[in-house]
Image (cartoon, rainbow, N blue to C red; front, side, top):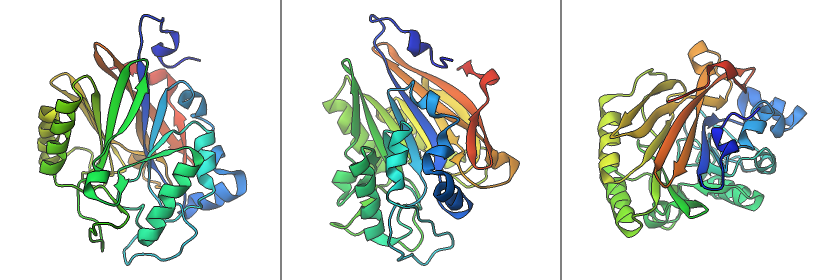
Length: 300
């Protein structure tokens, strides 16, 4: 079954389809599943959909490292580095790592995560040894269409300080992020820009006023679409000047049991010369695994 009209596109309708998911956790009660059945098994309900997109971007909510050097914080996660190969096998091409958990095992654990992903053929987003490097977008290309993807976390991280020249995730001020996007748009006027943001308040069904303010600033700077996560629940999708904002996609592979935490969406963005089209694909998380709710597919 083809869920994307792009599967039937003609040669004249050149487009680039990028699929975004919410939080992927490979620890806690999910760890024994991954160890027993393999990490790819967690995604087998959605792998056919992944294959229909040109790129698939997850939010990786844990470091991939053998190190056990945890930070002093409430929730500490860790996945195995070899699991990155399974993530690539199911069709995942990019992983947002600018969030509040990829640093759970310290800076070297974060560096291990980058290396595990990179070695497996997955492009990490929002990482670097300097703010300049962290604010350098990853560009996804196809048939003359270019999409620059920025990834940032927009709140302070627990027991973590920025250190220039050390492994870190992208944590700019909103002013620095918008300035960088404005600069990039001026230098690359034909490129689309997507901001993948770890932001908002956990378990809140609606974005707060600051998020909406940030979204408007980013759109004014030249952003074409915003993808959000961190709240662990779905927040509304809206358009600002005809450009889509998904405030929160919710979870994806996760073990939270509250009913609201088991409802989520994937965001499909299709880029054409004429602009960007957005589609929300509802999913339900059953026993930690995402399952598409097929009958509810609608274009937005």
